[in-house]
Length: 304
Image (cartoon, rainbow, N blue to C red; front, top):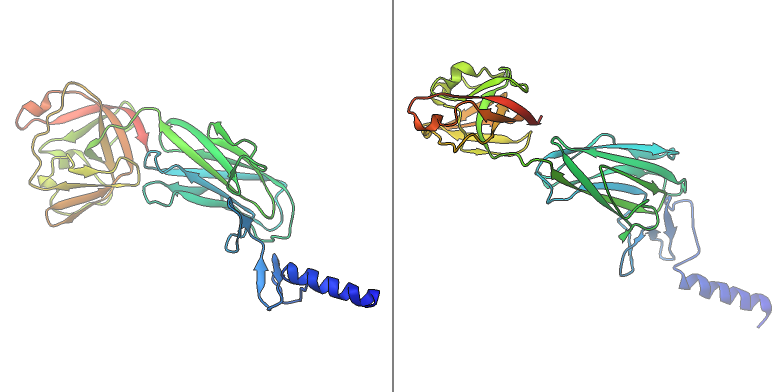
């Protein structure tokens, strides 16, 4: 066999062994054309081997550990030397209470662009506390595009180019746990730190003006709730006719919700949670007196 023929056979065997050497004008960017006309997309090699053709790479994903306090967290992303096709979502919102606790904050559309971009991600919470984070690059902690595999604080810096997915997961610990919400006030009443709020009593409806409320039912509402989420943006419920006089022990701080909307369905009232206040009780033994009213001084706005 001549040298030229042996060379042709060698190349043919080589191409068949690497899923085809041919590319044509119909092959999409980031894809290899195979001998059977299908396309093999670039993907990410995951632990254990194999390529995931559905994962395009070139992504920065930020998550909040599901064990963190239920809240909506805000993520701000900045990039240095971004590629022309980088799509950055900033600010992005991640909500642990909805289960959607991750967000893609950067996506590189042109996967053939190898530009290395430095990205800083800053996360904040609606309440005071501390953050820590872990960073993985294509499933491997730290290497090579995470500046650190783990760290303390609410800021993480990473790099990105066309074929890596970086995932940063923040964990959050609240500085002071928010007490279980027990009462609600209207949003049109003064409720800043130092303000006196009227959160319970037979005349609750006279002391609590609300932006949007039902036309009936409030006269029977004394202000204490039967269920409430412990985060801003959540909801609360109360059952009319079951407003027994609450008994509070000592002068422990209590959580008071600020609501701007109340809706009545049958004997149930529901409303939104715009803020959660920490209130010191002005009269810690009010629950022992029939017909008493209760007020307190706002010491902290836990979330808003």
